[in-house]
Each structure stands twice: as structure tokens, then as C-alpha cells.
Length: 94
Image 1 (cartoon, rainbow, N blue to C red):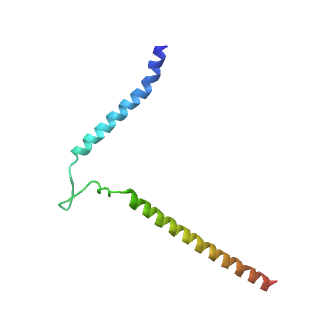
Image 2: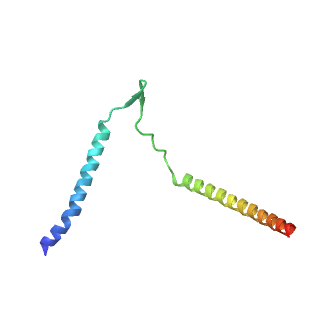
Image 3: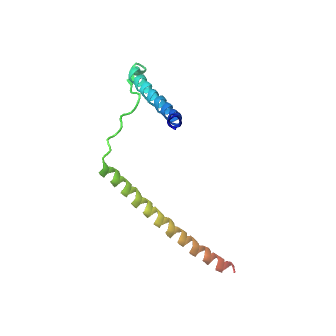
């Protein structure tokens, strides 16, 4: 019974160990990288991440949702006008 549990745990344990070794190896390689230079000017490997605070993200999402709502209303009005014009043209052609 215990040998079955050990056999069943070998696969996930091996995968976890390989993932941890890969992560550690990647971290070591990132530390060892030299600074890249283009025309003699040092260029960073990655751009710094901007700091995000919850309030500014919420404000941006709210602003985007308001804009999407307004655009939807505008499109709806345009479609309504288009359908009215199509009905008029249909009546004229009859």
C-alpha cells in the first residue's frame, strides 16, 4: 500500500524538482547577464514596471467603461436613424 503511494508521488515530485531547478537556473543566468550596449550606450534588458495602486486602476477601468457605454449608446442611436431612413426609402419605392 505504501509503495503505491510512493510510486504515485514520484511523478509530481520529479516535476516539482525540475521546475525548481529551472527557476533557480534562470535566476542565476539573469544575474550573470552583461549589460547590453548599442552604439556604446548601455541599454536595460527590461523596462522598469510602473507602480500600480488600486485606486488608479479602478479609475482607469471606470473611465473606460463609461466611454464604452457612451460609444454603445451612440452606435444604437445611429442604427435607429439608419433603420428609420431605410423605412422611408422603402415607402418611397413602393
